[in-house]
Image (cartoon, rainbow, N blue to C red; front, side, top):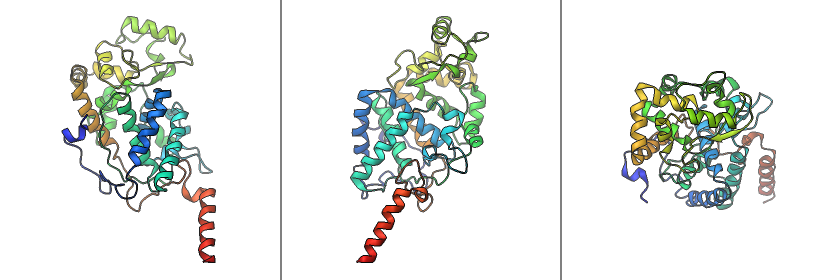
Length: 332
């Protein structure tokens, strides 16, 4: 299958990113990552949604700099501990660590954690049935994580309506079509009861189809039920356009999903994606390439973390290796 970026126009590349960034330093990076993810997804395809979401949550908070991977420190809790990130899959972080190790074995520490996250997100889309496309690379890893307040402010809740989401995305240079296309990531994955029970209790959201609502009430019999359900009831593990078919039938799980169909300015886009999967794929890839370049660090900014969850300056193990190298050089 021809990669979509060959068939359609792609967004302007941020200075410092390139389609062939690791051509000399790590030519097999993408094949190493894809090979491992094929094995991972064969055991549990649910991890595809986890890795895709990790990329979203990284990019929207101070840019695609892998700051979401950083552990908290004496300066405060990391981004992972902010409320919008508490539902990120623990397995997603573990998989990124596995990929870091495999890529290092292949090439040494020349590929950033931020680029590994971006490639893994693309492969999550493709290996669950969606489009394949090239990802511009060359991101560096951030030196600091965002504050709790900044994390919360940049990750809108599932209860946010479409007009508010459009205003928010405009601050990221993303438009209404980008919003609807990126929301299509919800064609795979799970949602927690706490993210949508406000649509069921105490009164049912009138935009929710009756049988769908009743089924959800069985899964979440109370507003504080700790359970999950699929985001796309038609093809929950397949990356396709059925999410939009759900919305047309008033079977979107979150307010932020269903309101895309209720809201006049985005309804036509939802309908067009529900009717034309190829169009959805085209717009999704375009929006992902735009999002994947948000506030990236390149060149001499940032670093390439040897351990994705720790800055190099805080990495005791790395310091030891560097000191040993210095001692060996001195002996020579």
